[in-house]
Length: 294
Image (cartoon, helix red, strand yellow):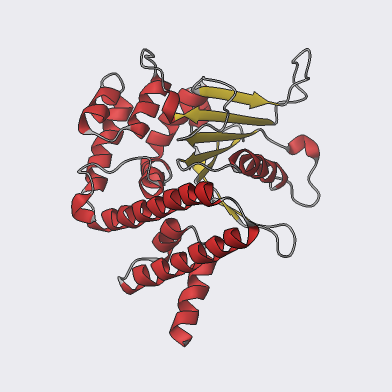
């Protein structure tokens, strides 16, 4: 499949998106994107810190969550950027869970509630999380239901819908979204016309796209997405009988295990295997250890 991949890899692929926006090397791209979304001052993003994206459970058997990108700003704001292209009916609940963890993870024993900092989830999506509106950019806060004054400013969710980018808009945010959503060279070039930061990001994307290791990761992610699309379409046609759903879940888990083993045999790093399969690094390590023992 690698030979059939486009010359320029899509930023909508998780493995590409994280390398463009989620590394210290390219933090300037993340700063420019966040400024376009949040309209904050330059000073807010001075010393921007990319932090560990793993949200650890606070109880036995609790859920481990892996965020796409997590950062802390100069004033202490906690910001998560999440990319979700495939339809996911649980996405709104998932984002609420992530946001709640971003709040609760801030306090250690002995700390006071007044020390909590604002937490913001930015969701870049390829489907309609919010079907009630035709807007491409929606902002959610905790407001009183009739007079709309805030309870506090500690939480915020921003949804950016790539399917609804207005054709006539001309600002930094829509330029970034056009760049992320682009698939063809012409679309990338349109997005870069008015924004030097996006031109620089596009130049780096071309370098990434020539990396054989990243193209291998892209190949595997595209295959997983195609299988997931097929599963979604199949589940709609077949109905949602509990026994069949469990069987499909087991099948997807087994497929993920097989992909992880195949990538390990090709010499891929354990962190990259986790990126592609959706397993945690610990799960991949346990899987590879079990395979060695067998």
